[in-house]
Image (tube, rainbow, N blue to C red; front, side, top):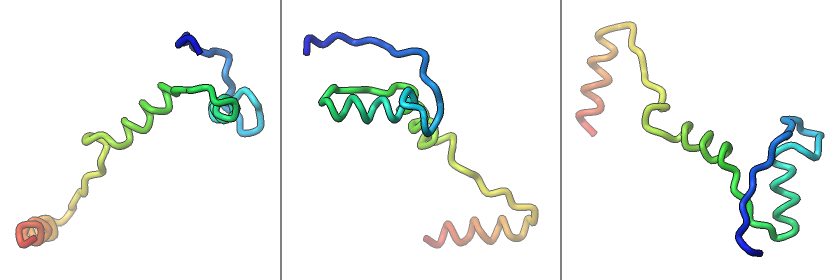
Length: 74
């Protein structure tokens, strides 16, 4: 209501414990309490960042050259 922010410690990573992060967020949402999960947002950003994309490794030089030529055609 007044914009007070606080962090919560003593959180357990468990699918059945009510103190797990996602269950805690769900409980807060049911009472219309705005929440922000910083660690969850950071995890999603790290998965979608440019450096996290998988790169193909070609063991055969001819296959790599053919793949480059196919990319140039498009």
